[in-house]
Length: 362
Image (cartoon, rainbow, N blue to C red; front, side, top):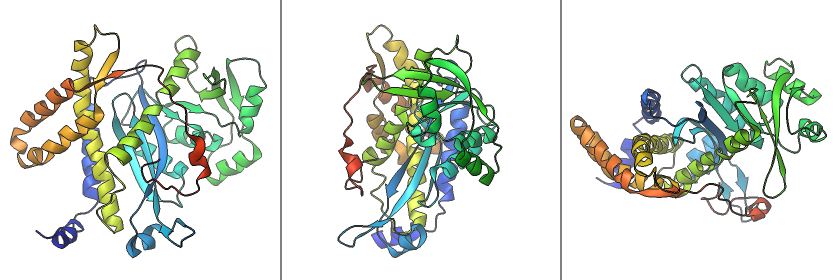
């Protein structure tokens, strides 16, 4: 088979096939009873990123030019958003779109896909999703969901909260005039929200403000909320797995259909690793219960094991249990320690770079 023949054949496959495979892994995820939870809640972290695309006229026609550097080289990018179960390492919903669509629109569409399918879950979001209008939109789509969002210091509500001496309290969050306009534009009401505000002092001395609707202060303490928000870092690791370890941006195509094929194929592979890992972790925790640290499986090795056996699994579907057991057995032997409180100094030099020079950097 020549490369040209393969390239022509792949475009006959609709990208919806790979999206359907992702939905199948989500159905398997829902049926699993051994999923990890935090205080009986599934922790779903939400984050967005961008994805560098190959240079081709078909890409330019569909996604348009994102930027042009000083040498006249055109850059093409797509926007990506992910709803990720950080404790079970599974992608519950993911979308790729043109850059002109904001993260708020993708967020609403992703949550619509999950509404009614999950119970007892909490969405954890960073400062990019702290707008009054965005939170209203999430609660409109999924009114039963719990939320925990970190406020940006640029927010007017942030400044009002910082002026108060309390560290953990409930308050009404009323929208500003600009936020009222945004709500009306998106068909949302402008009634104030009753929220819980928790101030957390970081090791650096910086104070982060968490807004949530977890009103039971005896059940969810301020320390609990600080730990909960720290779990959000798992979605950052998921993007690192997707980009630097799985090489998402090394596209083997030059057309939009191929881009969507490869994106959802990568999400499918991530979920295959996560589903095997859920089963493996249940055994790992029992075997390592006597140790000082808690342990989990090595994700990169898990991806390697799944990738090595995927073709055999697909071609010998009648004997699939044999390969599933092989993957799980290998995951149980590939361990890494979970060390709480690990942190590294953030390299802020990236903020000074207007265009991404390394495609592996988020």
